Length: 388
Image (cartoon, rainbow, N blue to C red):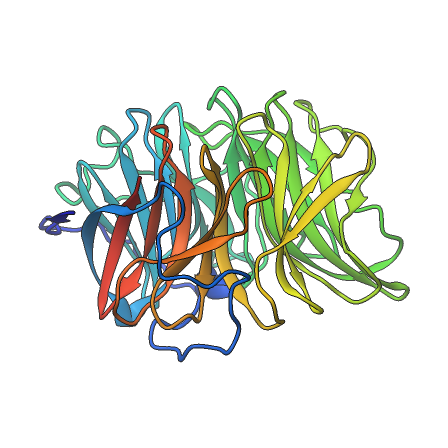
């Protein structure tokens, strides 16, 4: 196993405005104690075909880490967003960028390179304003140049403070989509943006298919193979709750009816949403009766397949990714950073501890070589593991 240490560059970028981070919505305190939940198949053997082949030190104190994101830049190199209690750090092949004074809510690769979606306090608006923060070497000099500010959207848009947002790029990576909660009503909006200029190209109010919602939680946004989008919402209403997947076409028009994947009457919130290589949605559901479960719905027919990942409620996860070897989920509160792989077919899920120390797996993504990248913490360090 190769271990690489990345040293932060001098003169890291800083932003001036203050804000409140919401990025720890799906993460655990790196020092948290393990829960009693257990995976369906608990084994110390690595999942079929997967081992840790490389470990990279991201050089961020794990005691401050609240979450992470991992994406691949256009040349296939990993770009890791490490969210901390004081800001964020983005580690790429060209160097390290430290961001303060704005909340980096998500990170996406576009034609213009990696772009962060930010929320920044505004002296006029009661809600923070949305912006884009480019992390391409040619646009932001990764610590070797003057301080940069997020590019505000045109026209300006706001989003609630303290709640998550999600971003995804179009199939051709030319358009950036952002899913945010509404600031003045119970609802959600999808914005289509030019990632280079921040121009708002289109907007669409999301219809969750639930009458008179009283609350909702965003779970994720992903591009589909036909140029559209799929997004996940957990919706509460007087008549009960629903875990809803909504399809949108390339024009942000509804692509079929919203689909409730909740298995019963008890509230089972969506944890994460992504798509496979064919653009089909894959969702992670927190079933109160069984714990975490993978759901693979067919939005066209309304059918779905569900596979349990854990045997008891209380399990938590930080994200999922779909690769050639199956669906990989980053589990939280396991003592050591742990992932669980659900292979194709009927094989049982298997778990892999990424290191023997204390920490959490916080973000996952698939790489084009058939493996995965996992960001997390272990024994006071923030690390990026390559699985292959």
